[in-house]
Length: 241
Image (cartoon, rainbow, N blue to C red; front, side, top):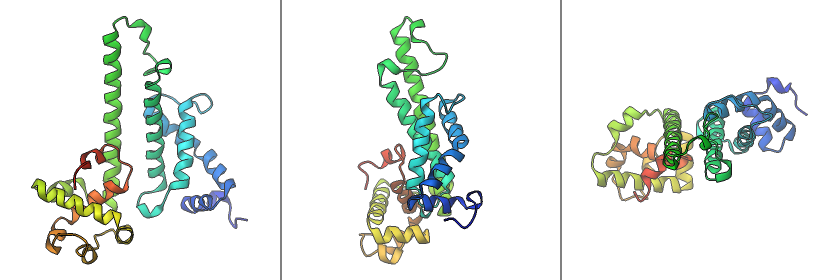
């Protein structure tokens, strides 16, 4: 039994309890945070979301539950920040899935394909909507990336200034970041210390200590990208390093 009222428990404690199997707390969180979930979903759909009627809310609720079960405070972000991103991504994925289903496409409340006789116009509207969604998703990733960088005392401005100027140097730094991330012990060190394990890292890479120190910020930033579910940012790393 809990020794304090549920309402007085810190959120992280409740989440930890749910992850240990407390279904009562799980149901409490899913019910209590419905307004928060509806707000997140509404920001994606750009309209009022009715929890009783809108399928998007159900997707958001399931995503919030997934966030509860997968959240780890060691990653550096707050649960609400983490869950907001999970909910929005799942809803966006759902919208994209619906778009690919011809019988169920609905881009906007005021959009009626039957009123558009020109098929080219219909395609153009869909493409514009898709581009807007992707642009929004990219912005969300960048905003979340900025938050994660802040945990490591980095900023996008610093990252721009610290990025290696030459292609070979950038590829080498990305390769170092990949080795760092793929080494369980070194990855845990970064999680805990929020810095590069220079002494241990130099033993497993073909890069000098001086170069590692010079590219420290850039390597940490790539580590963050590798550690997160960034669909668009990771596109830039494909085939690099």
